[in-house]
Length: 79
Image 1 (cartoon, rainbow, N blue to C red):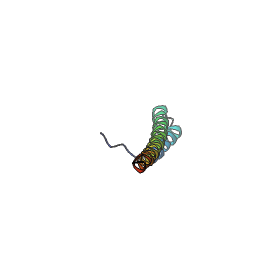
Image 2: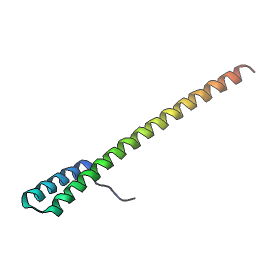
Image 3: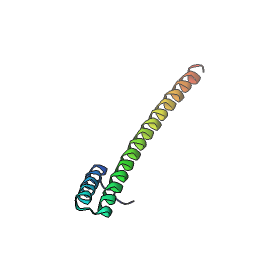
Image 4: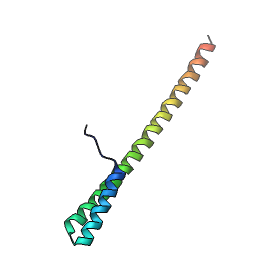
């Protein structure tokens, strides 16, 4: 797995490239900056979604564990 750079830093670098491209009339540099910003935003959103899923799975596991414990207590207390 490769190390990914910080999306916030990439977003800032993209803004700088876009600005420099606009000022100098370099369309390629301007476009590269825009692409870097979009890419960074997508990675940020993906990280948010991944964190949300991990939290939801953790909550589900906790609820299942609690339910299993409750069932076990009911079954063993009837013996």
